[in-house]
Image (cartoon, rainbow over all chains, first blue to last red; front, side, top):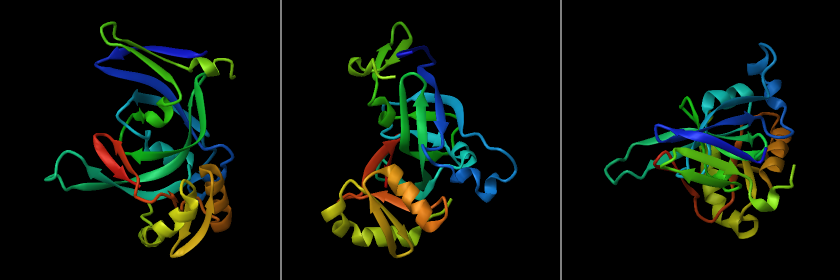
Length: 151
Length: 78
């Protein structure tokens, strides 16, 4: 598969994203938090295509459950306005992000957020061609022509 | 979620010095100590995990200025 098409639902482009532990990372499976039984090495979850996000954001619960390496907190600064001085912190993690057949990024630094769905940001989208048909309410993601032959 | 406040302060103190030689690479701190610098995220993570024997640690890309990222209509400073 070299392209993925979908319908725009309620002004949202949604894809299934595979989130896994980074390539070669097995520590999460042996941490004390994972002693209750076998843990999945990856999970598939809904992700919103978000060209406004410079990096992808993944539910923190997913990253923690997978045992992805954690790099601690980073601070959010609002861009809403100078009077919005509230700040938040989120976790920074490494993960493997895959859109099967399109792109497989073995080490990506992502944000762990308190959301039910993931945000597929420009760190992944910059590897793909995104075609958006607003009136037709469809979108297509595909590999660029130069990488079509790459398995 | 670990905050790594000591490490964050140590990294900021040494940011300019590290950027002079290692801009674009990945630095890992443990307390005030610089554990190492690696050219790639994967190497840095695996190397630090081996050195520190844990899966959570302070890792940042080395840059002259804090990197400002926008997500969810907000900016994130790494």
